Image 1 (cartoon, one colour):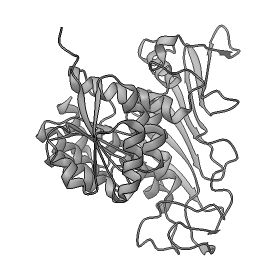
Image 2: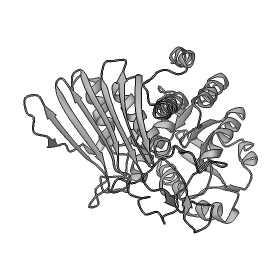
Image 3: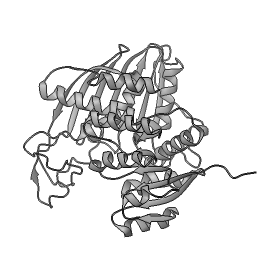
Image 4: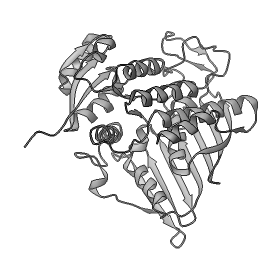
Length: 383
C-alpha cells in the first residue's frame, strides 16, 4: 500500500506568529512535508527549523521559490511584504497562503487573486477566526436554516493590548504622516471581523463608519522608546447593510479593555440566535451559546470532539487551535481538489469593505458597495 500523498510546504518568515500558529499547524498534519523555511536572519530560521523538523533553511525567498519540492508557500512576514511575496509565489507556480491583509488597496488584492486563477494555483488568506470551531458551527446553523432568516450580524473586537501608550505600536505603514489619522485597528482587526460577518450575512451593500484616535501619544516600533505624537486610528465602529437585507454592526479597537483576541460574533435570525466568544479565558479558548424563539434564554453548546483538529481541545491555545484547522483545510483542498474557501478573492472583498469604511469615515457619509463591481463579477465566474 503506497504512502499517503504529502504537500511540500515552504514558510517565509520565522517570527513569533509563525512559531505560535503556522508551524505548529503544519507539524501536526500528517499530510504535510515541511520542506523549507526562509528568513533574513538565519539564526531565527534555523531555530524554528530544528524545533519543527523543517528540512532546509534559506535566507533569500527566491531560493525557496526555486525549490522544486516546495509546492505551497506560506507568507508569514510583515504586512508590507505580503503582496510582493505572494505575487512572486504565484509567478513561481506555487499555491500560496498569505497573512492578512494581502494589500492595503483592494484593487491590488483583486489583481493578485486574478493572477492566481490565471496561474492555476490555489490561495488562502490567513483569516484565523474563520477556523474557530464555534464560528464554523454558527456558519452551519445559518446554511442549514437552523437560525432562519438572518436579521442582524454583529462583529465585535476588544483588545486592550495598546491601551498602554508605552506598549510599542506595530505595523505603522512606512512613510505615514503622523499628523493625519492613520487607519490601523480597522485594517489589522477589522479585516477579520468584516470577513466573518460577510461569511454569515452575505455581500455588503453599504457601510458607514466612524474612526477615532483615543491615545494621541504612543511608542511606535522602529521610532525608539520615546512617545510619538501620532494620530493612529485605535477605535472604529461601523454600520452595514447587506444585499440580503440583514443589518450589521462592527467594532474594532486597540483600547477596549478585554483579553486578546477578544473577538465576538453575534447572529440573530427569525428562528434563533447564536453567540461565539473567541476570548481565551480561564484556560478555555472559546465559548458558544444558542437560543431559539421558543427558548429565549441562551444556553451553552458543547461541540463534539470531531469539531476540533486532531490532537486539540478547547484548552489548546487559540493560535494553534485555529491554525491547525486552517492548515488542515488548505492542505486537503490542494491535495484532494475540494472546493476553495477563504481565498485571495475573499481577502480582496474584505479589504474593499475596509477601504469603504475609511472613505465613509473621512467623508462622513454612507458608501455603497462594491467599489469594484467588475471584480465581483469575475470572482463569481471563477467559482
